[in-house]
Length: 441
Image (cartoon, rainbow, N blue to C red; front, side, top):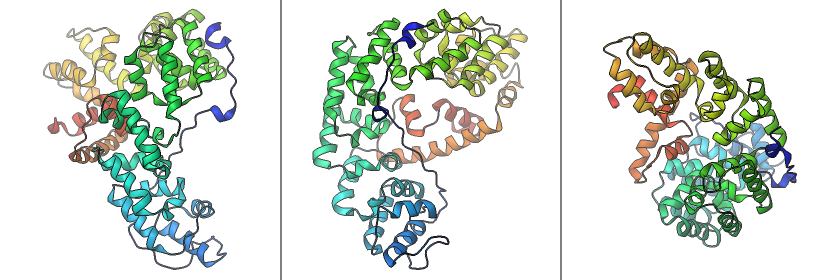
């Protein structure tokens, strides 16, 4: 029954759980640049007094908050005049904050409007911008984590930055952490991270893995050591080698899912025909297979087992394949491979077909054979849903905006960073570029 995976019960109080910040979506077309003008508060909002009326009206007309959100925000804020608040908004705009960014900041931290622009906000904005972080990225990260702007620059932010710089060996390493996990800079317990790193090193985790943890999985180190220790023990008991990065991935899964959640994932695999031994093999092969959604598991298993005829045990030994998107990768690539195989032009192992990058796939399958099979490009395109196309177009707009921002000097060197910056798959960006704007490449 996969006893080691589920056998150890981990009971922690709610305050030890990690909660993700809620995203706020606001139309970019909202007009936030207008200066505040006095007038009646929005319909449905009760006017208790002049200051409250002013505050509510300002939150709606100048910050773009919905009336109900403005009512909640106004309970934490009382504005008397627009001079300081206008100065705050103008400063944020100067540092790349869009209408949506401003709305998100004010929703999460209403008192940003009463903060001193020159003494409280500007020094922190200047500090992060001085490292060449593109302003759209800076605004995006700070709008989701405005608590950073409340922290002391000298007592908190700079010491945390120096801690990362010393650990990772460069300013750029610390900047990467800001992009990947900005919440770290609002955290006051760097010593806890240092203690967790020492704990993992003592358990045999090599330095390269520790550096990768800090760069890309920092939230793993921002948990109580008791919880981390229990999850490390479970990963070791499962058979993971601490010298292999798969051990880190397994620990991450145990930190993110309690036993009931893992049991639900296991039940999905059982329904797809996997035995207990197969499930264990799948987890050891790719721990992230336990973090996939039920929909993703069912789509991947359906394709590999029902469509291609694989045995469930075969999928278990290559469980990393389940992490690929059915709509974006499995379905369109297999359609191309079937055509080429049927014409006797090319046969390839499915693992190779799915794991190669989009650039290599397009060169190896589409470009190479488009003269022999002119309809190949259309076959590949037809596999995409309208929803995916819309997502690709949205990704391209993000890419164009980001490339423009790169003129500030900060360069992205890896696909992993691209994914984190755009919050979209880097391959999707390449797909949409080749598909709709081939002259760019």
